[in-house]
Length: 509
Image 1 (cartoon, rainbow, N blue to C red):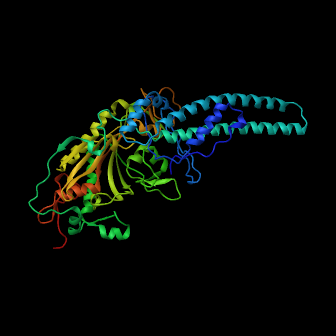
Image 2 (image 1 turned 90 degrees about the vertical axis):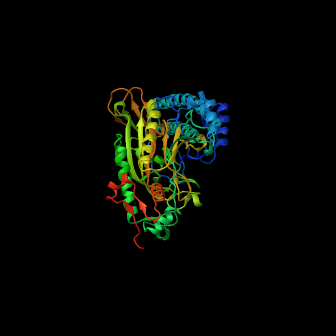
């Protein structure tokens, strides 16, 4: 489910509009096509805009209309089209900037025509209304009633035409990705640069096992039974692995709270529109989102989505910023197209537990909070004795919302490679323009949906970062802390969170 293309326009001829508008009507029909991927954007230019419309009830795929509108700064896009075009190229995006600009100009022209037509039709309606006040024969009165009704229908049709054009402009503009930090490396994933390296790979004096074999030998992970019960890429955790999962979650939340984050647990089913507003694609052949058939709801792939929705359509007091959350949730991902040894075992699964950090802040603070988030991640992983590297991700590897993204890749000796265990993204005002999250500079009290508010507001910046994705942390811990006798040592910082457990030993010899 997503933003959809429009149905055919009502004929413009009934309005006696200029020939130029008829030509525009042809161009509008000509550009109608299937919905593009839901890669929405936020340009951090003008700070004032109406809050996006709230989501409506679910509709079938046969009746597709836009469910919400992002507060995209189209004038900024037009005034900075060269920079936007260059950004689209460096991110290897399929956005059609030329069509966006054309639709925007067409919308402005139609708005002018609409105003003229509205004034004309209202004047005619007033004439009809004045005639109705006089004494008339029943037939004449009925004729005037029908005439008034027809004029009202014309006004409604004109509004619908403008709405349809606005919908297509939205769906095209939402393909345009966020602007990119000037220091982000340009190119594909191989162009990402290393910011920091922590530790070095452990040297083993014995033949090592991967986490799949360790999990089986120590009777702590069961992939076979889960495959029979649920399908591939599911798993049972057993015995000490259960303690490790719970311990990792409690350890991560406790550590992050020391930096002033508010703990949360979140809903794990959300409306599709919230998923879209956060920049994820709920429908499509390669979607990572599980959608619930017969509803407008989805399972979350990250707590970033429900946490982002907490303050949707709100105006926050500046004094309340920054808002810093650390959220625990279960996550669900289809992992469409994922296959091969790179996804072996726990590395890429359909369901997992995760602790996510999320920040809402003033625009001028988002770069510094981005550094704070990656610093928290590095401290967490360093304290567990992991060897990892932090990467500044290249432009083509950035999701549409990300202005800049840092990834953490840890060494996984059993898999024989580095694997991503965390990322930290600055999304600037990309998500807040879609979620309608603004703040009022200066002292004020928060208000919901703009009620009782006045003056200039600005969109907050949002950031997200993974504190602990449990399955991949288990991969790292099991493979890096394995011993020659096949047992696994529990890192010291985790022991208070797993009942003092020091070693994961065999159940049977």
